[in-house]
Amino acid sequence: MKILAIDTALQAVSACVVDDEDLDFETRETIAMERGHAEALLPLIDRVMAQVEGGFSELGRVAVTVGPGSFTGLRVGLAAARAIGLACEIPVVGVSTLAALAAPLIIHQNPGPVAVAIDARHGNVYFAAFESDGRALVTPRIASAREAAEALRQEERRRETTQLVGSGAALVAIEAEKLGLAVEATAESFVPDIIFVARLGLLGDPDLAPPRPLYLKAADARPQSGSVLAEAAP
Image (cartoon, rainbow, N blue to C red; front, side, top):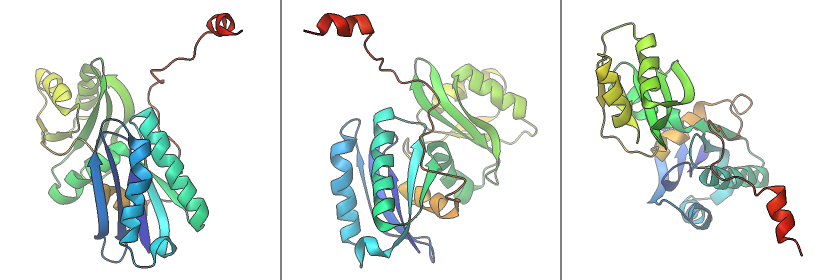
């Protein structure tokens, strides 16, 4: 079975196609960007699928990152994934951005606990931690860097070094070291490796991991008040 993976959760637009027989990618493309995900995604998917013999008819599943991440980026990716799933009559699986960032460390380095911290601004991070076998150690949440470090301390049962990854890793590492925890902020990418989004999508159950956004905080934008709208009305 071939799976199309899509990621628009953070500062990149990515897609790839992976075959479940060898778990290697047939084709992939990633464009780093802060904005413009909506304009870039569909042309990127078209380029990726143009390199797959048989095109969309060969797909058996779609995987898409569901967050946490950018509200706009998540909506773009989820809408595209759902549309492709409907058109091709194949299941769509949601993949946690936090799990996708942790997966390369868990699979390739087996370093002990892995924690993921994505910068959520104003000193906060989207945070989760995983055992070396992938089981949840700290469930996904938004927290201050200090609170994230405290959560690690509460779960610390060994003196193994916890690997920290993500754009907020350095923030949490500073607070964790103040608490005497053994941590190491890695130099891994701040965006998920799209190959691991695909691999997690192959492992996921579409019934248990639907393509629904994982929002850990309210949107920054706020609707205008009724009085303002009334004043603007002719």
